[in-house]
Image 1 (cartoon, each protein chain N blue to C red):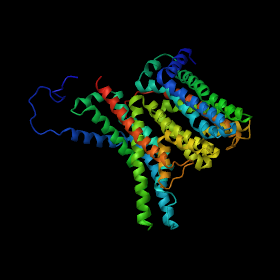
Image 2: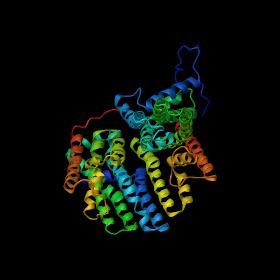
Image 3: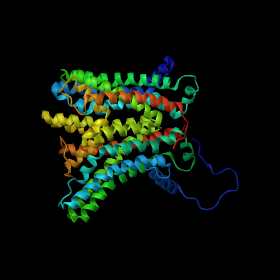
Image 4: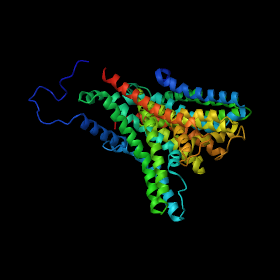
Length: 232
Length: 291
C-alpha cells in the first residue's frame, strides 16, 4: 500500500468526465426507485433491484472504477513512470484496487442498499446490501486483473458480465457456480431468504475470496512483467 | 479558412496531369475500409476475435432454430424475424458499443484525422461515410441471422409469401433501428475518445436505458397506466424498435404497445434521433477538422 498512489488513483477516478458517468448510474437507480415508490407503492419498486440494479448497475460501476484506476495510464503509456519507481508492483496493484474497491462500494453497493430501503426494506435491504458489497469487492479485483492483462479490459469485462453472467446465466443454471453475482447473492441469502440461493455457501465464500485475492495478486504480477505495446 | 489550392501530394515536383479519382472514389474506398475495419478485417488478428465471436453468438441460435424446424418439421418458425433481433439486442448493442470507437475514436485520438482531411475529402463527407460504414456493419450483423432463418425456413418448405413478408418487415425495422444505434454510438465515441469510456457510455445508452424502460413499462402495465409505459418507450432505441414492431404486427409483443398517434410519435422520434445524432456527428468532425 502506498498513500501517494492511492491519492493519484483517486484523482484519476474523480477527475473530469468519467466521474459524472460513475455518478450517473447510482443516481439513476435511486431516482427511479424513488419515482416508482412514490407513484405506485414501495413493493412495486423492488423488482428493479434484482432485475437492473444488482446485475447491471453494480458491475458497470465496478468496470468503470477498475478500468479508470489503471486503464488510462496503460493506454497512454504513462504507467512506465509509475513502474520505474522502486515500489513493489503488488503494492501498486493493491493501492489501485483499494481505490477501485472503495468507489465500487460507495457508487455501487451503497445506492443498492438505499434503493432497497426505499423499496420496502425489511431484511431484504441489508441482504442485498451485503450481496452487493461482496460482489462489488470481487468484481473490482477481477476487473483490475483484466485491466492489467489486456488493453481491451472494458469490453472483456462487459462480455463477462452481460454475456456470461447475464445471457448464459439466465439460460444455464450451472453458470451460477462461476458467477460473481450469484456468489454475492448466495452470501446475502444468509441474511434474508427473499434472495435466491444458487450454489452453496462454502463455495460462494471461498470463490469470492480466491477471486478477490487472486485478482489483486494477478494484477500485481502482470505489472511486474509489463510490456508496452502499440495499438492493434 | 483560406481556399485550399494544393493538397498533400502537391510537393512541388513535376505535376501529375493524368486523371484523378474524385471525391466519390475516395468516399467509396473509405466506406469499404470502414466496413471491413468494423469486423476487424484488414486489422490485427486480435481485433477479429470480438466481432466474429459476437457474430457467431448472434447467428448460432438462428442455425439451431433452423435445425429444430427441419428435424421435427414444424409448419412455422418458433421465433419471428423481428423478434429474433429483439432477443439478441444485447449482442447487437455490444457489437455497436465495441466497434463504434474503432471507426470514430481512433482517428481522433491519434490525430490521424488530419491526414484524412488533408485529402480533397470534405469533413462532413468523411463523417457521413464513417457513419454509413457503421450502419452497414450493424445491418450485416443483424441481417445475417435473419438470412439464415429465411433460407432455412424456405428450404424446410414453409410458406414463401408469409416468410418474405415477415422478413421484409423485419428488414425495414432494422434499417431504421441501425441508423439510430449507429448515430448514438458514433456520437458517443467521437466525443469520448478514451476507448473504455466510449464503450461504457454506449452500453449505458443501449443496455441500461432500455432495461429501465422495460422495467417502467412492466410496472406501468401492472398498474394500469399504459400511457406512461408507451411514453417511456420513446426513451431508448430498442424500445422504439420493439414498440414499432408490435404496432406493425411483426411478431413482437411489448408490455405497453403504442397505438394510433403514438405509432407516429415512435416513428418520428426514431427518425429525429437518427437525424440529430448524425448531424451532431458531422458538426463534431467539422469542429475537429477546423482545429
